[in-house]
Image 1 (cartoon, rainbow, N blue to C red):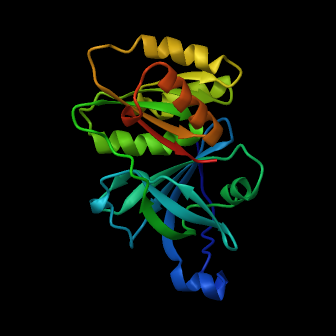
Image 2: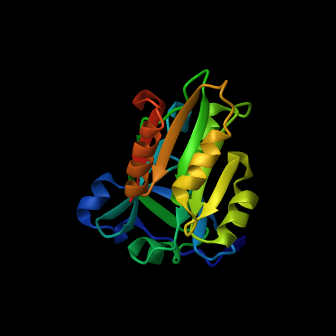
Length: 237
């Protein structure tokens, strides 16, 4: 993983439009780390106006990436006392989001409109099962943190390429994920994974990532006899 540093390049609120100045809040980027695959980023933030002590569910931060254009990312690995967190962001897609990511440096400001709940939270007495693609790493990390260090979590994730499997294992070991590449047979592999889950546990399945993938995975779980109450879905893109 590469740590990206540079001269301080503060983006002042004076650079925002008049309307955005009314509601936009500011965070400080403490560090920018890019995975060795050069297409996935970790941003450490200081959020002085946030109240992480009240986060009992996964959150989404509406992050400004250009004029009047905002993308939702999930704060993860937050610390209540220091008001810091980490955003895990996929930069492999072409567009404003990826362009914005490549301009960020430690010491610069990040602007956001709000931090809101997505109503995903661990259920006491159950084992969280995370299923999705690698754009959901932050979301699953937040749920794992809410579940607690002693929680038994597991998951199944599709990544873009083989190198991502190594990066997920190295940089996100706490998630205990079984990973496959995009070219592999997703539903066959998922079926095999689910068949190996210990039957004595009570599971809640948290689906996140590409909306089409999330929708098809929900249908697949329902076909296996898993009831709707045990499936929590959140499509991102």
